[in-house]
Length: 139
Image 1 (cartoon, rainbow, N blue to C red):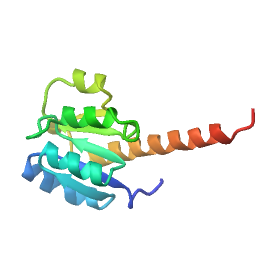
Image 2: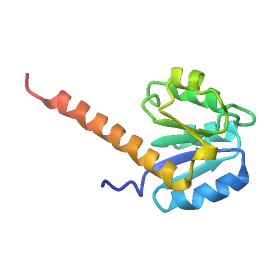
Image 3: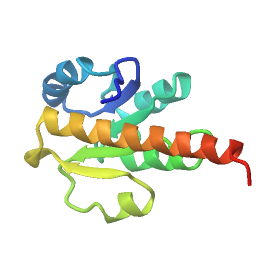
């Protein structure tokens, strides 16, 4: 399995207890940035773009949906995988705006989120390799 220990992940969630449960586990695998509100998450992402974003739907100051819209609305950031970790019951708007995954908190553990992150990072890496191969292939 490819290692992602130097890969930056942004974890944006308003629940400090939940963050305290997830972040130590995530830090064993990735470089982590965290925020408890959407505005701080956006600032951190703009200063140091992450390879993947994990966000709650209901962030204070700027919603997770608005954070997703920002990322998808900027071509340099739009390929960034975006995973919702939330208790919000309806994922239709987020998925239609380009969220890559939707994990319900009540059905998840840190290990499940880590598996999903590895999956999306591996797909992103594969997509980039395929693009480079296509650029240099002889037709």
